[in-house]
Length: 395
Image (tube, rainbow, N blue to C red; front, side, top):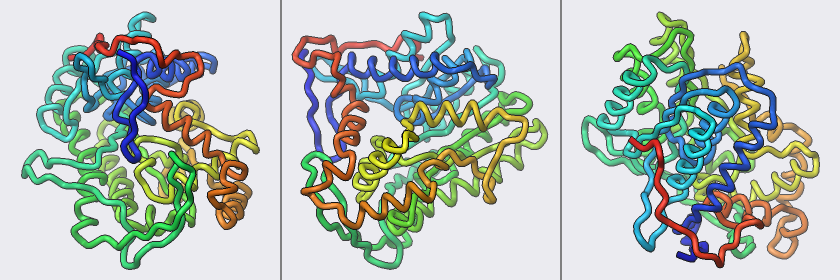
């Protein structure tokens, strides 16, 4: 079929298999161009098909020659209908991993469920024995609790006061004011249930109880803090409460890992265009300005550069550098004073008319469409392509 992008709000409902393969190959090429990482050799990535999770799997496999298991919830293709981008990403990743003799298998299903946890545990038991590293990178807006069956839905709302600021429709470039009503206690509870640390801990409890964690085991979950600009709707909003819970969970998990000298970490990552961040009001405008500033200073990083730096310069050192809250900070370049001061300056004067010159809206758009396999110059999008792509290591 001939596949073009079809957008609905902040998501693209089509994806291009060849474009997704190009996106994955570019990340693999980046890792292979860098020096090897003395990292984990048996790695489980929960939320492995897009964004930071996909970058973590690529970095583990092609940076440390690690065997990887990926867990995700993606839509397979049907005749005349494309798969989700994460499906095509994983197919491309596994094809390249297998070509280089690397173990790579995947499980597609609801990672919040007991069934998928059990299936994953059995695969680890059969093929790995034990895992050295678990990356937790789930970014779902809903969660059905595995014990109660209650379905929770997260929200992106401020707390206590209505939040008003400007945002951009990145499809049109129009900047307009947006107001978001404050969340309720129920909104906070729901968001914590979906995006907090409970499921991360359930995964680690399951694997530890099954004796599937190696000595000196590590697990990492990804978080974000961000600037003062986005604080009311992000870090001090409902999603921020969930991130607080996630970060507190790292200490709980570390406590239960003491007997195997294990450790749980939070990595605070940079603001980037992901399927999740595109949904957050105000963030697209902030990222457009941030990209402009960081590219001009030659310190811009995408997901793969961020995760390579996490693995190479932080996670596998004898002494891992953390902030006062015990978090690994690879948002350090984003949060530099000179970067944030310039972004604030640009934010104050940003309008529909000048954003294309003072910001990097095109960079934002390209990154957004790259998530779904579009906007790559070397792909002919008017040419027929086979949408029926299989994941070779799918269990």
